Image 1 (tube, helix red, strand yellow):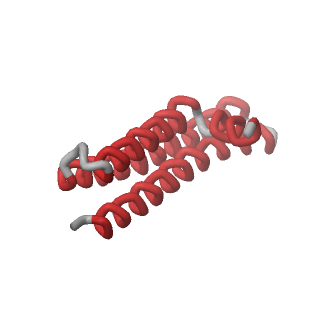
Image 2 (image 1 turned 90 degrees about the horizontal axis):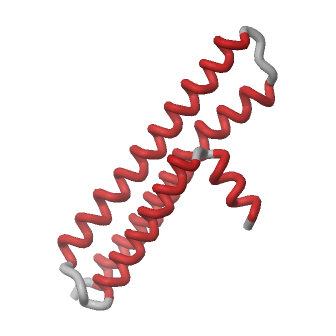
Image 3 (image 1 turned 60 degrees about the vertical axis):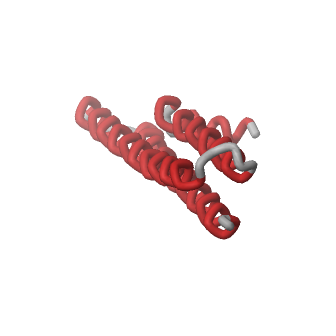
Length: 117
């Protein structure tokens, strides 16, 4: 579990944790609609929108990570591979979390559509 938290921290706290928070929001919305406490169409649309936002937020993190990596290279002139790798890791973890969240949201939508009466 601590390894997972370390990876999420490597991806940028301001990128990965908001995506995870939005994943929890989507799960709560899914549970509410399956219990009949929320409007199906509105909730489905909201889950779709949030899932797309998660991908965009993850790729924003990727862009920030790449810019950071290139800034370090430019400032140092000659950079160690470990310093460059840390920035690249940040650039890859954000989109990964965003895509995984998107896939989970799509699976929830499939279940919702299949359950619709």
